[in-house]
Length: 105
Image 1 (cartoon, one colour):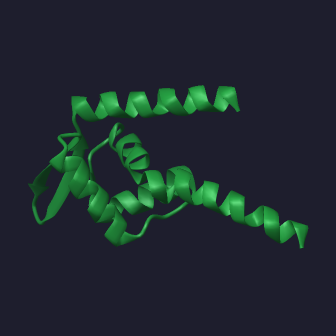
Image 2 (tube, helix red, strand yellow):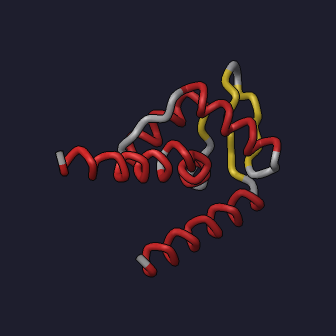
């Protein structure tokens, strides 16, 4: 019984720090190279060990692009995304916050 009770808070933490903050993973992946949306999911899985849903990836990409944190351009039939300077600043801010939080915990 006790083991089950401990699983719910951890599952919630895991969900919030992964799916709930997909923007961090996307910006982190894009800081290295431009990526197309479908390939982005595989990149997140390779680098961070979990694979976001396709729909959620597109939703977050749209919001990041609309906010000026990433930009897109077609190369052939694929739409590639790249990070902007505004996106790099947001990523740094997010990473700084997480480091600070981890130290306090």
